[in-house]
Length: 359
Ligand SMILES: Nc1ncnc2c1ncn2[C@@H]1O[C@H](COP(=O)(O)OP(=O)(O)O)[C@@H](O)[C@H]1O
Ligand SMILES: [Mg+2]
Image (tube, rainbow, N blue to C red; front, side):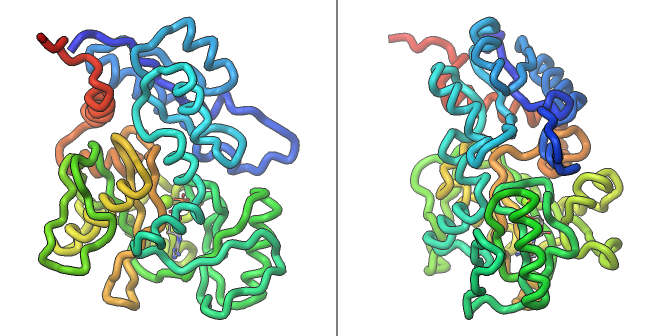
């Protein structure tokens, strides 16, 4: 392949805007300079030119100057309900190719209730839910405690702690108020799934027809060609059960390098097949491209039935730390190789860098 100019587009934590009354976790989902430089190095190791460009309002100018052949996009955005879709929207406007999912998918995936409405419509298993825009909205009769509350449009366990598990009306009202006040976005309340914490990462793009839901006929083939699934990873939360029975912001941010990650997760082959199938179905119905990670809880009270929590079309790519990096490593795929797999998948999709066809 020819040497290409690749712009690595990211939002560096250290470049993020600061404002009065900013919550301490405001920029927890942005990337460190260390991660950004590791991605630049990985792309250079793939024999390309690469430069980091900050994904803020300076981007249009910096793109005009650098003139990339393609962008490797990991921008989470700063503000707004579609913030992960803003940079791709600019790239579409400027007709510059980029890795990963496009505008609609990124905006939808950032919004957990919107994602769940789509999953529900496709009969994919996701915990029953209700969205609160005010703290005094009545709870639906079919929503039974224990419940779980989280912000609608955050990541990295932001707003998630042991207090997110709700046992009664009082806790429910308290948590909804906190979420509304702190994040200024609706609170998502779900049935609490007690159980195991598993995530499935994948690279590729679906080819041909893919069923949108688990086939009711067990004998129907499960078509998921084009996606490469990494072994599922389980986060072993048992050492933290006294304080955290869920994958909280504290664990994801403060204790990330101390957690026990089981990869491949100790699951039987049928369960792995089901998880991969669900992950492919979520990828398809959300219109994801090139790479994603789907988070599940396995229900301890219902034969470990998998429930889909969310899809992360911009999964973290920090060397040695991020879930999909650990999953790829379990198959002997290092950080550099994974980053270049994602890039090559996008290049293939756009047909860039292929030898000119002889007519
Ligand atoms: N309905 C639920 N039942 C039990 N635990 C949940 C539920 N929803 C979220 N969690 C816990 O909170 C964590 C973060 O939730 P998730 O929806 O994946 O958001 P994030 O974008 O912060 O990763 C999950 O990994 C899980 O441990
Ligand atoms: Mg998650």
